[in-house]
Length: 357
Figure: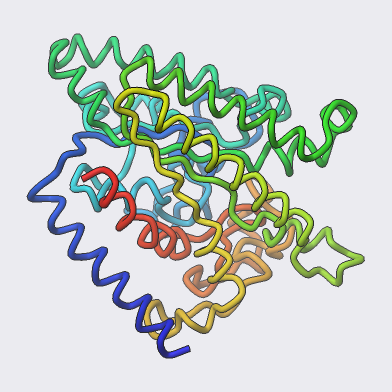
């Protein structure tokens, strides 16, 4: 146990050194984000959907204690990663009218909470589908070329770090909820279907000039508070079937990434697998006591009862909402706290720096 804690402490120290180094020798001029609620910084605020988080208690630990549309009490992994690369402290949402192209030069988020690789997933809660995120990216490129000039814009586009994080909703909010996909696909076939979409997405990004891609697979989705709460016959333990599905999907995603790295000119895509670190936090929270003051609750979330609430059900007025989110692995029934995001980001940053320096 002591050895593992020492290793984690060294990892954090290395990350801090990297953050300083990147600020003086940075080869990533911008961080550009695609995905779902794990990385959405507020795009859903501007669309007609029930899936929003632009109200308290969301954002209560963000700068100024303001809700931004992040599904978290504070910052998300792209924010920490962008800061580590010396780019900017927080990644703004593309649809947020408070920001302009001048703000987006060094980073922008196209992600939409509730979306997935499968277009049918985005239809569930009427959110932005992945193909539309690509259209926003094309629009952004046009604005960028007007703002900084074609040559400079093309340099930013080719040298930027692209963070891609989605897939959870495809399984938990689509495949396992509605019968349509289950009638057409086995779980394995649906995984293949999603990976094919992911491959097409990467190819489109590459054709649009993207070269440095970090693609995050699934975390232990069977251990989300919502899945524990509904696992009645499993004594509210993690749903290991879902965790196995996540691992299988991640393996297929990694194979696809490896293939495209060989096929597409100048592509450098990284499989940023966060399953291991999140699983470690959930199964061995005591190992983090000496570094982050420890986690006290891994099964329930901070917000409300901590079992099924998210979005509008995560109410500021609920007296059951915890006072200190840093003691919790999860903020709401589906999303991690800022502290969990920070630990996961610190785990990934050295790998990102090694790959994209």
